[in-house]
Length: 190
Image (cartoon, rainbow, N blue to C red; front, side):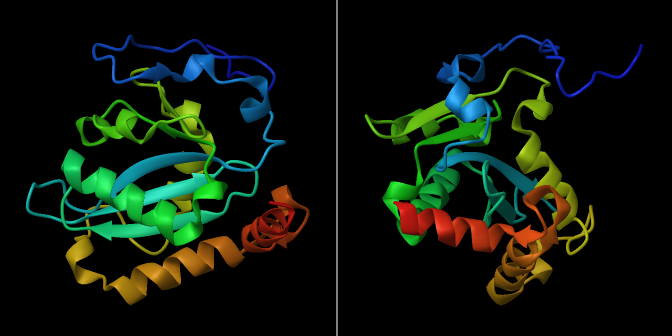
């Protein structure tokens, strides 16, 4: 099987057995082309995958690649929606027009965040590439938190320093500026 090119659109490999809300396939072109600020992708990064272990909520703004991280005591749905709400309040409500999640049980209550100004989308099953910016950031985050390492070993200050390191990194993709610089410029426009 030949690899797909950037212009080719892949078909989702699975079907959603759960309908948590609006499908990612209904996102408008303005979100897909990354020209508009305020569209986010979210995921959980787990160190050890046991129920008593903390998790890391990772949010990536699609246009700027700006990163938000929040350590959660567990990965229950109520904890995750509380964490998302905390991040929305921390950054500012105006910075959030949409958030895309996978279909994990930890995100099952996220449709409750939706209202006129904020839309919530859910990926197809087994289609992590539909949140590609976030998945790439998760890979970069593994430089600081290797797979299998318990997140209990990292303080909130450690997590904050990882967030700052990811967002302040200069990237070719962003014209050798940082996500933080582009994010701050986008805030001025709001």
